[in-house]
Image (cartoon, rainbow, N blue to C red):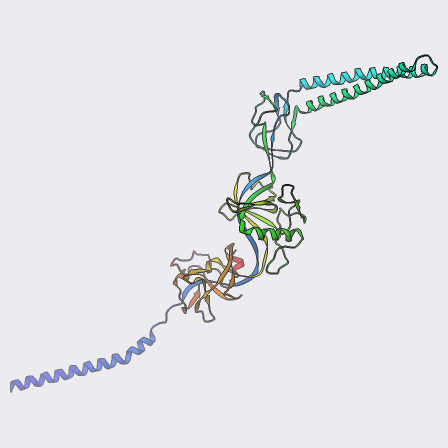
Amino acid sequence: MAISSVRRNFLWWGLAALLILSAWIWWSGRTRPAVAAAAPRAAPVLVHTATVAERDMPIRIQGLGAVQAWASVTVRARIDGQLESVGFREGEVVQQGQLIAQLDDRVQKAQLAQAVAQRVRDQAQLDNAREDLKRYVELARHGAIDRKTLDAQRAQVAVLHATIQSDEAQAQAARVQLDYTRITAPLTGRTGALRVDPGNLVRATDADGLVLINQVDPIAVSFTVPDKAFAQVRDAVRAAAHGTAQNPAGSAAAPGMGSGSAAKGAAAPDPKGATVLDRPIPGLAVEVYDRGGSERLGQGALVLLDNQIDAASGTLRLKARLDNPDQALWPGQTVDVRLILGDRANALVVPESAVQRGAQGLYVYVVGPDDAVRAQTVRTLVAQDGLAVVAEGLSAGERVVVDGQYKLRPGLKVAEMEAAGQTRPDGQAEPDGQAAPDEKAAPGNAS
């Protein structure tokens, strides 16, 4: 009887547990879809975007150059003598014709005085001989002297006249020697270190001379470009010489010239075979930047296309002339050079950071109307000033991702990184007060 009661209680408790378990399973199955439906959707990836812009881009060739003085003269004495004084300070600018050195001139003054005195003496003899000739002519007319005496007097006058001419040449030579004691600057330029101190004896054969003068305004930049660019440079020179700028995309506008611009000129053949431009050509501008930097030091124009390609280095040498009033360029300085050959009109450009490299080549992430991204393969022509010129794959007005690509994959949604304090795609916070780039800003404004 007791056993039967225990079994009955166990069955009741088991039935109750089974009902509770069934109710829990039923409730769990009913609420799970609701919980899943209530789960939040994935947040969009924060990125920077820019719009594909259409603009004219200059056609440039990069080169490595060296700054040279436009003219360089080593000033030497033309006669031997003692250096008495110097008329400049080392490193200062001297003007053409300025007295920069004075030699002892006492010997030259004495030689000039001697030559002048000799001429005066011979002139007196000539004047006397001419008076005698007049008297001999009158005497010969009356038959008082023979013809031979008259001819001898005429010869004497001619000899003395030639002597006067010789004396004048001697005096002129003495004046030249005296002028050589005053050494003047042959050009306007900056002096270097003085190589001979006053009091020393200088000679015309001294190799070092007195001082080196470099003309630094204007100044020259000699640079090289790869030999494969020869045809492009040659065509641009010919086009500029005929008054038309090179423009393969069809634009007739040539880039503006800066302080180095000049009137239109034509190419003139050099006796040695090089193509020398008699004056800078508008349209073939040259920009000079500090080595490895972005600061523009000057702008000028091409003036020389060398007559041969260096076979050893595979480069073509060019030369530009630049105004240098602020002395930003200095002889011997190494600089980066950009030769501007013309304009590429209506080029499609994007920020260079938008272009990524993958296994299939170059691509960009394009943002669709629904803010979803897709990977688009592109072909670029050149990258310059932080912009990439796109030849294929994009259209003007499309939005591309320029920052934050490492978190993206095709199909993901993106959102523009907005204002200060917003977290950037790289996980760092934007600095306060510095807004992220406007997604509507054209790439041209970024440069």
